[in-house]
Length: 364
Ligand SMILES: Cc1ncc(COP(=O)(O)O)c(C=O)c1O
Image: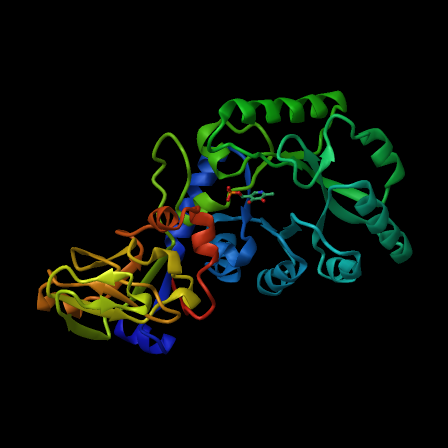
């Protein structure tokens, strides 16, 4: 790891395990029983979308990728070339339709005004384009109301659209199976009503693991990064690992305070380790006095307030020889779910929040 650390110009770095990502994609492929659109928005949930997508295009035959913004889509197009579908699942401002068109990006139509604007744009170009139709079934976010969407009128009016997928998004496939079934029933009713034969897509990660997929494409995100909320273990592997080292050891006497504002007072004489990671890296300040790191078999609690670039851990009980090892902040022993508990959040947010200042190193 020494040479890796030198390349990153910092002892703190994220090791992104591409074979683990590919393994998780395989799990999603098997459980989906259909095609997988790999969700790599937010720079691949913080892991680096381009590297991930390239890897699973080659190793898993993934041909479809979902992102949230036009700039994410363009970056991916530059890396992946022209032989994959890149879908923007979110809103696109009409000022950027030119970029959408030039880069052959699939736009999501979720409202009549979007259909009207994009169709007019295509008319002016004298061209056609692929779109996804997003239906609202219970998330109450983006989408046409499934009960009132006149599909016949839509296809009659907008003949420049090639509808590649009709989709909906599940709100609670990790927590409320009854609600999830209700959303699926609403979607299925629509599909049957209009005898729809084009591709469909409903399942996110927890649906893939908790339900049997019957739609054309699944859209796994979080499970491909190693995490999912499910009733049983599907053998996912964490993709992001964050390592650093102790850059100073310090004796602290009983009664002394550690870090800003004295939120930690030593109850005994202790040894602390200083680690160069802080909230500007995505190691949240609310982890202060709650989180722990792993050091060669030892769990070391964070002591005192986390600073912008630095934090301290209790290493009193760690023997001298352990300090040759790197400290693991996230990985096999400390996972993103623990981070989520410490901050009252979810693994998604923890991964996305790892800032650019932490260099990503890719294991192939
Ligand atoms: C439209 C859409 N599809 C799929 C996903 C992937 O969801 P998950 O990460 O839970 O698998 C997301 C993520 O939020 C999404 O917004």
